[in-house]
Structure formats: structure tokens, C-alpha cells
Length: 133
Figure 1: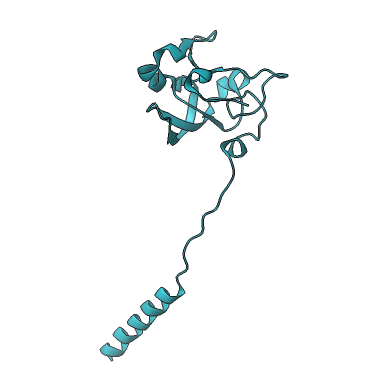
Figure 2: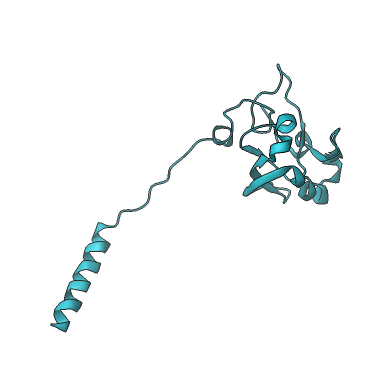
């Protein structure tokens, strides 16, 4: 009886192996598609204002929440998806954003970081070679 149970377990394991199918890659689109579909401040690659896309954007980590590192810039600092904190959304933007953290950029390219009118650090994305459309 004990051997029959072992044989059943082996048969089930073999059947499970045969039923395996390789995972498929799902492409969800560009970062722009994953964030706000090209509307808003420009931090997500969308258009800001009429035709002018700002190159200096609020990038102080103190302004952000739900931060997820999604990559690394060739210079060595992280690339992130994040939301601005609720009290900052009117001035900085609503929805999921793509960008960098000013403190990381400041350690590598300090000339790309300045203090904005709101008193928080901002980053000149153009100096990083990041084009915002």
C-alpha cells in the first residue's frame, strides 16, 4: 500500500512536469504609458504647458512616496516610479511619475541640482541626458 502511494506521487509529479509551459514576456508599454499617458507636468514624458517642457523638476525625496526603483542611469543613480505626497500634488503633479532622486544625483552630478522656489531640491533633467517630451 505504501508503494502505491509513492507511485501515485511520482506519477503526479511527472504529470506536473509535462504540463509545464514556459512563461511568456508581457510588454506593458513605455514608462509614459505606465504613468499618466503623456499629460501633466512633463515628469512622465508628457507635455507641460502649451509647448514648453520644463527641464528642472522637483526631485527631492522628501516630496515623494510609494517610491519604486525601476532602473539605473548610466552615471550610477537610480531611476524611479513614484507619487508626489498629497500636499505636493497640486504644485508637482498627480499620478504615477518617473524620475530621479535629487540626493543621488547631487552626489554624482551636483551641478544638475538646485533649490526650487518651494525650497526643495530640483533636478535639471536635460543635464542628465533625460529628454522629457
